[in-house]
Amino acid sequence: MADTDAAQVALVLGGDPDAYRVLVDRHSRRLFRLAYRMTGNEHDAEEVVQDALLRAYRRLEQFESRANFGTWLYRICANCALDRLRKQRGENLRVEPAAGEDPDAADPLDTAPSPEPGPERLALSGEMGAQVQTAMESLSATERMAFVLRHVEGLGLDEISASLGLNIGATKNSIFRAVQKLRRQLEPLVSEAR
Amino acid sequence: MTTPHMTEEQLMDYCGGETAGREAVESHLRACPECAARCQSLRQVLALAASLPLPEPDVAFESRMWRGIRPQLEPRVARAGWREWIAVRRLVAVGAVAGLVLAAFVAGRYFPTNTGVAPAPVAQVTPQVRERILLVAVGDHLDRAQSILLEISNAEPAAAGSATVDFSREQQRAQQLLAANRIYRQTAGQTGDAAVAGFLDELEPLLVEIANSPGQVAPGELAELRRRIAARGLLLKVRVVGSAVRERQQPAAPAPAQGKS
Image (cartoon, rainbow over all chains, first blue to last red; front, side, top):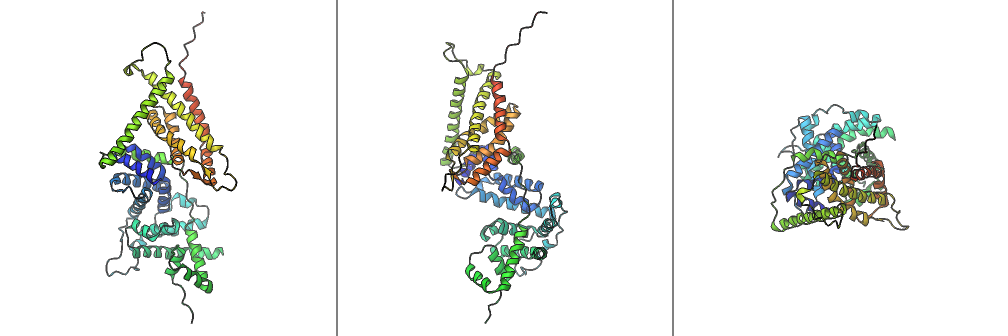
């Protein structure tokens, strides 16, 4: 499949924009899943996917044909989702601690207000689902992305750090903070269920 | 001497699938009920956080994405090296030749042979004739698409003892249909044939998926493909659209003579 992706990219670069349709058809659903987990609603997720597809098209010259197109596109989508979340929350993300800063100090994004509950959240069937959604929304954009990529998508630390533009230490730190926050909020639910 | 308990970070690495030092962690968890309970609790929290329902986009999702971005896609001026340039040119040339062959084939089917009349110059082909040539070609294309859909829907289950089903025939046929599907979809869209364009638009993602499937697929994957074909009613739609196209291929019947009053 990687060969076919590369062939389609070659056609697009050769001047046929319609050849991009095959790549859109092939990869959009996986991008949607990531975008939905980040944004929490279908409308925003679809816009993120479109942003990612457009951004990838415009940067197609930067894609190296020996690389995996799906992985490359996935990273672009992760960045688009991050950008969107930051914009929605009016966040000005600190990518990694500056020299001398305590990496465990509170992330300024942690205090960012969560968006109002969307219809998907309200429609969740149970109280537990709503609480999980609330817990996810309490994470900063970077924490949420780091958590989703690590514990939902199962990516390795190298890939996650490349997607987030962070070094490994900062990436692990983001995952750590995300899990700690989720744990504080969700552990009581788990205990009750036992 | 007692072994110190595991740190939160160690537990998270372990639950996150970190492979380094895994055996030592498991050994410790077997010997330490407290850490084992913490690990269990963490696993449950992670599973709960990852369990949010994920909606499946509707069948028109890919088409919607494409329509959303297509107007913003500027064609590129080829910048590839000469090897790539030749490769792309070769593809274009092959496509052009294939188009000519297809047109000749369709024309051969449509126009009566041995009429003794010299073929009409291309410039004299009327829009009505062009439309009917397109209809014949689209009709053949729909027949082939229906044949693939039927084959998949009626495919034999995996042989006993085999973990996969041979899918290479369907894969190759879908690859052959894919380029034609795109051309007919675009043409139908340009000529305002919304029904045909809409159906080919819906068919295309499925053809892409089949064409890019491995030659051997797991029975579960095949079952999922069948389920989606059935859920979208593609077999029924291909028959309905095909039937409508064939009806339009028939020359209009002469108006009945007016009866004398």
